[in-house]
Image 1 (tube, rainbow, N blue to C red):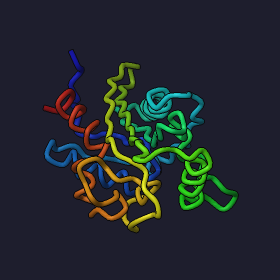
Image 2: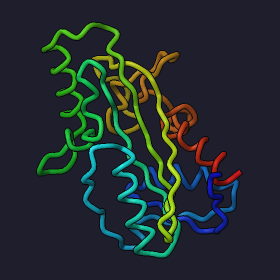
Image 3: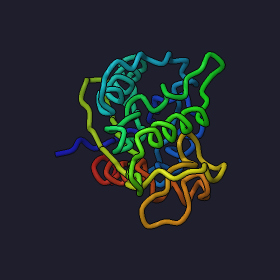
Length: 203
């Protein structure tokens, strides 16, 4: 049995304002107020695991322990089949520069590596999201989500974030970078994980 969420406040272990708004919007119908890690002055823990679930667990448990509130975290990234699943958990790391994150550089690197190996088209890929809801007593529930698609070039669209402009989800003509943010949020990997979270812990 999945443990139900019974409180009215949930800590979201993220410093990303966009992600926080997205989650608050999804949990609104359940009368849950959402607070972010930045508001609670929580540091970002080192993500030392090699899997999405491992890193999501680190973030959720650290936040729950620090605040005594149930905490929700997610770890997400893109897996490109021809690159053996890279960048995967290192999706954000590929964008790191001394000046901050540069996702155009990261997308270009992915494209250049695919070109260098003459990877066949369509270049299948998926966005993955793992949500972990952790309680202060150490219990957690895990919900994986996925969106299958392909890598396209050149980049298209300036909506979304990360690798969205080069990812075209299956069954759609637009990239995530061209889609309206709220439309994307109904079909994305995070939406998939959220449906499972809501069914498991909130319904």
